[in-house]
Amino acid sequence: MSELESANALTCALTKRMAPQPALIPKGPVRVGVDIGTANVVSVALSSDGTPLAGEITPARVVREGMITDYLTAVKIVRNQIQSLRDRLGAELKRGASAIPPGTEAGNTKVTRHVLEAADLEVTAIVDEPTAAAKVLGIKEGVVVDIGGGTTGISVLQDGNVIYTADEPTGGTHLDLVIAGRFGISIEEAETRKCDPTYQPLLLPVVRPVLEKMATIVCRHIEGYSVSAVYLVGGTCAFPGLVQVMQEELKLPVYLPQNPLLVTPLGIAMCCEG
Image 1 (tube, helix red, strand yellow):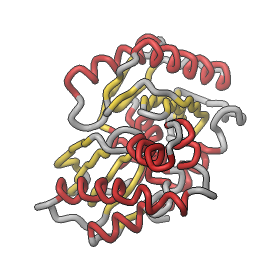
Image 2 (tube, one colour):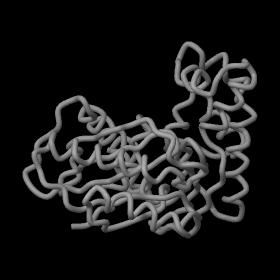
Image 3 (tube, one colour):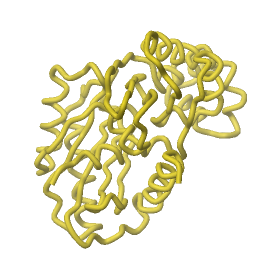
Image 4 (cartoon, rainbow, N blue to C red):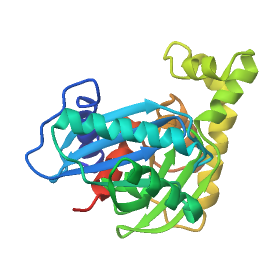
């Protein structure tokens, strides 16, 4: 099984365990990953051998350009998600991990840690988002690009080690702004249309300049590195046409796993120790 096939199997297994679908009851210790993103907060529970047990997702606007800006709401959401996981799994969840966009360590690491501690989790790791995604993808060479609601994060891997990370404020919310401006609609309606398969082909010409900007960001940050392939993760990467734009701009193979929104949360849970 290739790395991408393995990642797809993991995300598909987790999809079947996302609330309100039944959880897989654990037989031993549980690892928890919490991904506090710009558009969603996602919490994931894995067994000690990495089997997806359960997941929670809540739409939220608690992060801006990679930084937690609404601490109290973030705490409330994470508390509710962890309690729901505890109830669904019938297990005492003690340890958890989280992630932040590259380059936001100053201040953001401490705030993120405090959010998880407020949910009564001992924090075992705070990693950068693309590095977490790389654990799910199982790659040792290439570039992981994590495009969420607010930022585009880049990690360059060589020999299994992350040798460079970067993050810039361009993501899904920028698509929403362009769509809202073009059609004179609210941000909420723009988000709805962006996620609607019937609208997406009509929206591609409208948002293409933003997609090209994302590709330009990646191109600038990987300049000078020997890159064999690019792997896309994050909810925004599910927008049809992004892969083609990336391939055209980067002149490299570009791969998109199934359920890209769940890749980073899964990787975060894998980083949870103990």
